[in-house]
Length: 243
Image (cartoon, rainbow, N blue to C red; front, side):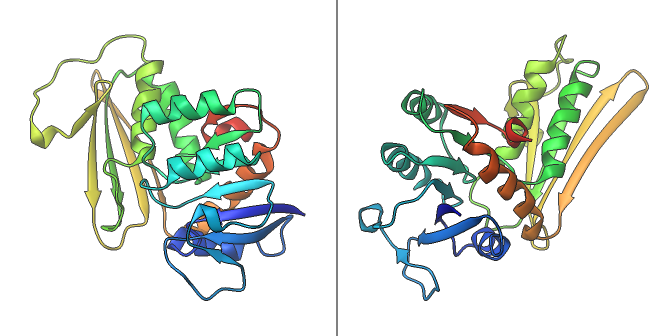
């Protein structure tokens, strides 16, 4: 069995992962949480309390803790899967340096397989349609806006463009502009995660959309990430690196 420490295991995604890892090749040996919880697993509220060895550190916690958690896990010779958002570019660069030549570190902006495919399809479309905007919707409790998935999608679109988009008006209503891609974030009850990418061309439009209706949809991607992170060296970003 591959031993896993789960950070953020009592959030909604963390609970889905607890259920999803049952009867799998992965064994949760303990959970790191900001608060004490009754659990069948050991629960630690600080990194210094962790007293179990593990092969993989799986982090779906919060932007406030994800960087420190990853630094600790790398220092303790664990592979790392990061599903939490909030890492800055400087922090990613530092983790890349720390992980060089060591166990794999996989940053996954979205564990949804449909979201991964949406990003790949958007890259392809951006070669022919440079004019694009992104609208994403999540539940009101999501901390970051825009989402890590939307930011990653915008950056991948920008890298794939073969010509510049048409200039447009700017202002608060135009969304946050990421690499010349306007991104609009909705936070509404009833949504789990949804993203739509709108492309416009000469007298034609292309719309790509994906949504998840339950956090159970992320579990197959989590399993693929856990399987794949042990096969890579250094830091990689995106679930498609292990598909």
